[in-house]
Length: 268
Image (cartoon, rainbow, N blue to C red; front, top):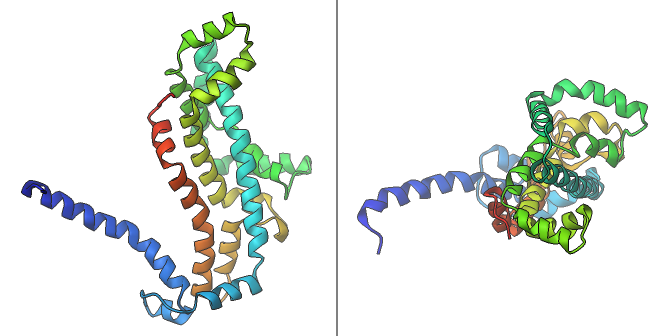
C-alpha cells in the first residue's frame, strides 16, 4: 500500500510524465488529421492517416531518404565504435609518458564548435570528391572525443590480470582486443551504438552542407523540405516526423538496459 507521504511525489511524477508523453501523442494525432484540423488545434485521433501517407509518398521520395539515413547511420555506428573503442582501449590499458598529454589535447577538440570546422571540412571533402557520399557524411564523426573518453573511462573496469593471462596463453594485442575486450565491454558498445546512431540519424546541419543532390538527402533534410514551402500540410508533415522518430525509439527501447549499464561503466 502506498504511503501517504509518497502521494505528492507520485502526483508530481504523473504530471511530469504527462508533459513528457504529450508531444509524442500530439505527433501521432496530427498524423491522422488533415492540415486544417491540426491548425485548428484538434488533438483527438482522426481518420486521415492513409491519406496523409499517400500524399507523402506521392510528393516526396520517402523510401530513398529512409534508406540513405539507415546506410549513413549504420556505417557510422560500426566504424565509430570500432575506432573509438580501440583508442579508449589503448589510452587506458597501455602506459606511456605522453598519453595523458595527447588525451588532453584530444579533449580540447570538444570545445571547438562544429560550425567552425564546416567550411574547411567542406573544401577538404570537395577536393577529395566525397560530396554526396556516405564517406563524406561519416568521416567528420568517425572518431569523437566523447566516445573515446567514454571507452577509456569504462576500460578502467576491465581486469588487467585477464590481459596478462591472455598474453601467457599466446594471444597478441589484437586478439586480446577482439576476443576478450569486446565481449566483456558489450554494454559499453551498446551505449556507444545508441548514442552514435541517434546522432547520425538526427544529424541535419552537416548533411545539409555535404549532400548537394536530392538523391542523397536524409530524413531530417526531407522533413525540413516539407516545411519550407509557402503552405505546409501539417498532417503529411507529421507522418514524415513519425517515420523519422520510430527508428531511434526502437533502437533505444531494444538497447535501453545495455545503454544504462554502458553509461554506468558495467563490465560483463
